[in-house]
Length: 574
Image (cartoon, rainbow, N blue to C red; front, side):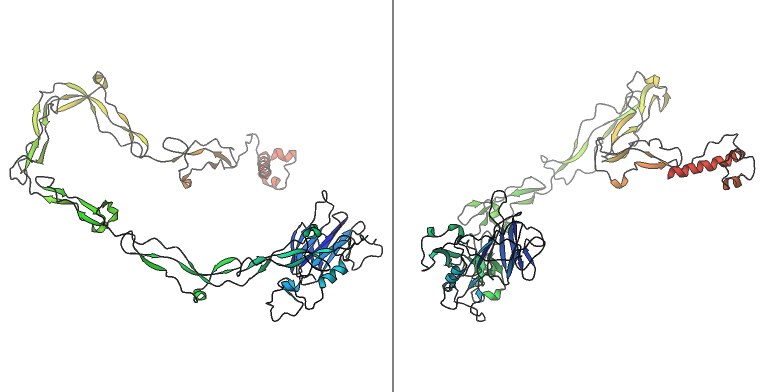
């Protein structure tokens, strides 16, 4: 069992040797069950071991296990080797009593570890005693004997045929690294960190000397340890004030106040009763960014926009700050803004009939027709007549006209256009165009040749009601793949837009089928007219399977041919 620090090194690598760490219960921690672990950190024995294994090509150094204590069970180091045992080197550190925290739990017995340190209960210099007893005088490291095993078994003692490891010669070491204390904890509460402090001391007098007297390669690496792990006192965490609820005048602002507590380097939100020993800050407050501006009427109402009837009049309304400056309307309360425009009624207006000139062209080229003009009732601002309206004496909008009798005049006559050929997209519409001769009160239909000297009106024109959007288009079906017994035929289906370009806007559920079955009827074999059954009971010949004989095949030709055709189709399906 190691209290604070333990390190052990094996003298070989993969082929010469391989170290393994196990507990007394048989659980493998590192390199167990004939598997080689990667270098890294492994949990075991109540602590964490750092496993290092140098590169076997570039280094001849052995493996190493390094761990902070204390361990809570006995651990065994085994070595599997194929050459003479290279040995195992180990070292450990026991801290002095003067670095032990005086706050010991009342239930701990003297000698037990506390916070990773061991309390020394008497005045004996145990460190010096251990160094005298276990220090390798040649390497400056403590040396111990550990069980060694051959591949394939784990003996509890060294085999009789095993060559003993050659131990290096010992020499006295006058100075050694010693833990003299720890650094200050990084925090006073809420879990901080501290590190052991190692100094070079004289082995006999324990006086600190220059570090040049000690071997720097054997100086232990300071490992961090937790300290002051108890939670910090709760405190009120105050958030920032929100914006004022109003841009001017008296408003309110809010902020968030939470009770928090620091533990394990994290700030946690806790229940508010833990902060009752502190006065809780206010969460709301009044605020006023500035004095609100007000509306002022700058001018009187203007004259009405019309001399009669209903018009409008305006006035100038401005938003003025408390300093007398004109500011944007948003600075004032828009709900209180005075009207700056309103309707005004100047009384009824006089109205008159307004007329255009008669048209110059008669509506008929021959016979009786009419000439037209426009008539409208409008307000007359110039007239001072007290009229409420134009009255019922509306002037006439038509006048008769006559360009003389129609005597055998030939002309094209066009009927009305038909409906568009399609409901959407580009289509066509038709109309009848005939050649006629007009007479007084009637007309005669003539051969189109009679009107050939006149320009013929079009009988067809394009029409477009609305866009169709994307639609499914498909080709004709292909020829069936088989003439009987069930084949299939295919066609290509595409989604095209109005301009006949590929689109993905078609409804997939309306997509036409691209493949379908065809010619599902049975295949009827072509039977020679001379191939007939000569006997009425040829079905018995078929059932008795006598069609394989030439005589029966000829005598019952039709029946034997049909059964042969059915058998060939059955084999084809298989």
